[in-house]
Structure formats: C-alpha cells, structure tokens
Length: 565
Image 1: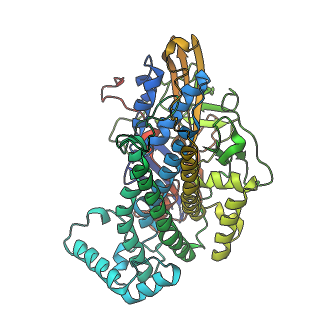
Image 2: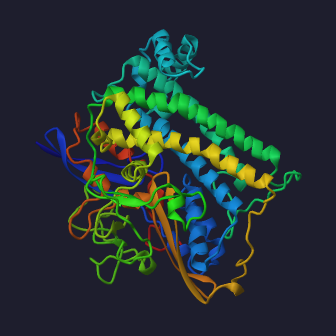
Image 3: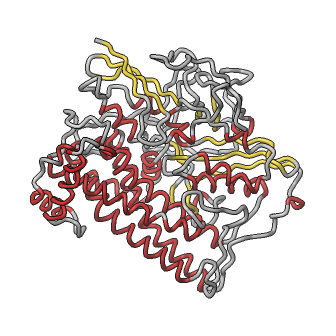
C-alpha cells in the first residue's frame, strides 16, 4: 500500500519547512522538501553602504546571527583587500566557537532530543536506578536519587495539569523509542539543565559584541576596544568572565552532552538509516592566522564524493564553474530556467506559480520550493558537522579522527555508521566537544597577545570609501553550525550593487535540479522506516539530524506578492 504523508511545519522553531513523503509499505520510497516562505534579504541590502550590510543580513536568522555577520564583513574585506588585526581574528574565532558550542547543545536537547527521548516514559523511571545510570557514565554532580526524583515530580505536575507546554505535540509511546525509562528520565533532566546553561555561554557574545542575539561587528576588525584599565571597554574583568564561561561550557559538554550522546546512541545503534547522498562539502573556517590562509583553518576545507575517504577535492568559491544555484524547481525566474548561476551573477526574482493555500500536495514535477538549488560542479552536497568531520577525517586530521574512531569503538560500530541519521547526530555532539576544547586555546592566544602589548582591534586603513576602487567584488565564507556559509558581494561607487547568500540549509534542503537529482533532505529519507504513517517519528528524526533552520534559506514577501524591500 502506498501513502503520501505531509509534515508541515517540521521544526519547533524556524519551521517553515514542508516534507511530503511517499510511504510504500513500511518504508519511504520518495520525498519532497519545500521551503514555504520567501526571504529577499539580498534585495534589501542593494544600494546600501557595504560597511552596514552585516547589520541587515545577520537578521536572516535569530540563531546564527554571528556567523552571517562575519560572512558579510569578510565579503566586504575580501572585495577591498582589507586586512584585520590579529586580536580581531582571535575574537571572531572565540565568538564563532562559542556559537557552535551553544548551538549544538541546544540542537540536541531542545530541537532533536525528544526524537530519541520519550518524556512520558520518564515518569515510570526509578529515580534511584537513574542516579546509578548517570553516575556510571559521568562525574556530573547533579546525579543523586533525590535530584532525579524532583525532576520526575516536576514533569509529573506538568503532565497532570493537562497543559504539556514544551512537551506537547510529540509522539510519546511511539514504537521507535528504544530507551528504558531511567535513561529517558536522565535525558529529560539534562534537557531542563541545558535550558539554563545555554544562556550562560551566550554571555561571551555580549562581552565582545555588546548583546546577544545580534552582537555588533565592524568591517576592518572588531567593534570592541581593549584597555585593561578602562571600565567602559574590554578589560580584564570582562575577559575573566569569558574564561569562566568557557570553563563552564567545557564541563557541561564533557560531563553531560558527550556521555548522554554515547549512552543514548548505544540503544539506537541498529537504526543506521538516513545516510543521504554521500557527497560532503566544507568551506573550512576558524583561521588560526588569516581567512585567506586555508592551511591554517581549524576546520579543513574540501569535497568528498560518494563517501570515498581516499580523496578530497579542492573548491574555489570564486570560480563560476564551482558554486552555482539553479531554480528549475524553485519559485524564481532566470532567463534560462535550467541554467546555473554563480552567486556573483545570481538573481533573486520571485516567480510563484505554485498552488494557492490551503492545498493538499505539491507537484514535484513543477516548481515546489522557495529554496534554490545550489550545486558544486553539478553535484548535490551535504553540509554541516558530519560533512566537516568527513572532510577532516579524509584529510587525516589527527584530533577529529581520534574522536570519531574512539566513539565508534565504544559503540562497537564501523566507520560506515557515520553515514546515517545517528552518525549525523553523533558528529554534531563530537564537534561541540572539539569546539569547546579549542575555545580555551584561542582565549589564551588573545590574552598572550594583549600581554605582549598589542591591543589593536581595528584597522582604519581602508575605512573611508574614498580609498576604495570604483568597482570591486568579494566573497566571505565561514562554517556555520549547520554547515558551509558564504556571502557574495559586488560593490560599485561605494554602494552594494549585488548581493547573494548561499546558506547551509539551502544546500541541505534544496529541491531537485534540472536533472532530477534530489537534495540531501530528500535523498536521506529514502528507505527510512515508518512504523505509523500518522506518527512519522522516524522521518522527523532524520530531518532534525540536519538541524534544519529555514529562516536563512527562505525569503519574505507580502500576501499580495509585493517585495518587502
């Protein structure tokens, strides 16, 4: 029997994603991924001062604000050949790794965790047994019998009130849940603890950027001044607060997130579906020295095709044949509907011809998404933590290779297990540990440089437009928590002439291209089991493993079709 099921929206936040899946018997045989809103931020920044663009484009998202701003600032600096001080690079790296750590913890516990953890099952747990389980895998202090009993009673009160709140709209009791009640109670407790923890690590951004979300940035360096004797700028008291938050984050990731992931994965290690297309792309990022020195990147750059770890391909973001966006199945208009455009030639011209809401189903033979279809040399590519780890592993990165190998060994799983929904979730958690461990190093580098007498955070050399060429174009790239991110800019007469952002979710959520090649979301759902078509938990588990965040991939338009720009 064949059934077409629709999940819309998919996520708890930023959920403008629609998935339609064909279930043939007990497995998915085809899938359609559609972004359901229009963004248009590229049109909003046209004719503006390039130095101001970061403030607009970081509003693409309410989560990845920092990394969009950095990509924009770097695009302008690349166009103007504008170097930045060493301290600015350190601060940008600290803010980037802070965002990665916070984002990955939030994703697992608050956006993805309840795909694996059954809250109602936790109410049946023996708190004493939960305490024994928690103490057996971690030295985290909140592990007593009384602590877990209090958590259980708190959740019971919520459930008995009939107002489930954050625990509503889930498939509790679904047969795909495999954790015993005691492990579920441990997961629920850490869900609640992570809610409090995540606001503390965000204080690193407030110290360096003045606020969070949407901290402040600056073309040519960083917006904060350093003076250890001035209470109004970055001083030793503020820097000591940063160190405290880094230490707290390291403890939480090492004593809560990583033990939880390995414990939970041990119950799901036979569920190795959801691998997807098997092509992986990483722009690389977090430069030890300068963004134009890829060999100094903490996250290596490269392409892996067909899961072949024996070869890593190079990529060039300025080569028109490497990165192209297609609109064959997207609601946009190109002069040649099946041609790909490099972002410097890219266009954002909406042309909706889909069904009028409310509607039952999309037609995948026509245009069916507001998300464009980016390709690298014609290949669909997965981006994100798994892609970064696959590229780093293939390049022989010693630290990442050891993390992957030791984790899979503890789970008694082969390397191929990485290419799955579970592997994608494991890679994200391991990357949180990788990032938080590196944070302390960049903080030490910053302090050492300041102690050596260098307090410069801004280079005024090319700030004035009178020093710019009449025309220039550049690209700013970074690794966002969800994957490879780049912004392309064209400048003419001191104003923005053209702007395009190709974001991580565009890569992963892309619709089919002109050849019929599926995007990563669509391909990853093939052969996914579905125990109950009215409760597609397995489908959500796979899509959530990418950490979909559709705000950056979507655009904005009025109901009458007028551009908001």
